[in-house]
Every structure is written in structure tokens, then in C-alpha cells.
Image (cartoon, rainbow, N blue to C red; front, top):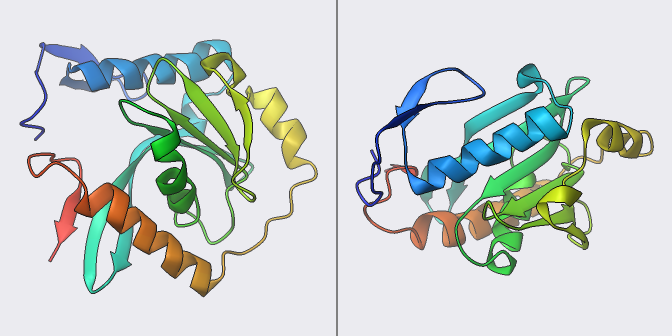
Length: 184
């Protein structure tokens, strides 16, 4: 339950068909889902929404949802993380989450506030494009994956990523935010 969000009613989730609370944040998530489906050529079966990732660091654990994970050919290939406000402050935690959602490095990470988007190289963390229109289409992503090396994420990098996610997404979260599940 998200007690800090104004609930405007209910809406149908475009990916699952479930009826969910209509909030300002949810409207942006739905906008992004429609972009992936209608403009970028992805199929509903290729997109996972609000997938929880278990994060453990400093003796604490939490489940942190990833807004969208795109799968192709049995690989998780793109992470899209939504958050209101500034994009630059969301680069590091999104890249860190992309190191925790699979045993290999996710090649593309997108950070968006629903109005703007930054597309990052998952391996280097470099900004490769900006704008919602620059989110890779399925065809562009498949082409990019032809040369991608599925490098495993080392234990050390996974531990560092977990600390970043814990600091940015769990410890710094509003106390009334119900999207993060602390496992104490």
C-alpha cells in the first residue's frame, strides 16, 4: 500500500489486465508500458513488471521492485527503472539493480521519470542516448545483442551493487513508501 500517493481511482494495467490503483506514478508506468508495446515492438510476454529483487547488504535485506525487465531469447536484456524527478540521481542505483537481476550483466539500462529517459550501457554505465524516443526498439535491441558478451557479474561487483541499491532505494526511501519490502 502506497499511503503517500494520491489515489485517483483505478485503471487497467496494460501489461497484465489487472485493475490497479490509479496514481500519478502509475500513470507514468503505464505510459512507459504502452511505449514498449505500441511504439517499440515488444510483446507483453517479453516484459516483466515490478519484479522484486532481493538485496542484502550490511546485515539488512529488502525486496526492491524493478519497474520493467525486458526478456529476449531466454535472457534478461533491458532494465527500465521509473522514478519521479531527476534522472542523473537514478543512474547509479538502476545500474546496480541491473547487476542483481541476473547472473550476467544486463546490456541496456533505462532510467526514466515518464517524461524523459536516459539510456545507459549496462556494462560501462555510459550514457548512450537521451529521450523516451531513444529507448531501444525490439529490433534495435536484438541487433545490439548480436555482439553482446554475457559476462557474469562477479561476487564483488554484486556485493557493491547491493550496497548501492540498499543505500539509494531502501535506506533513503520515504518511510511511508510501501513499494519496498524490508526483510528484517
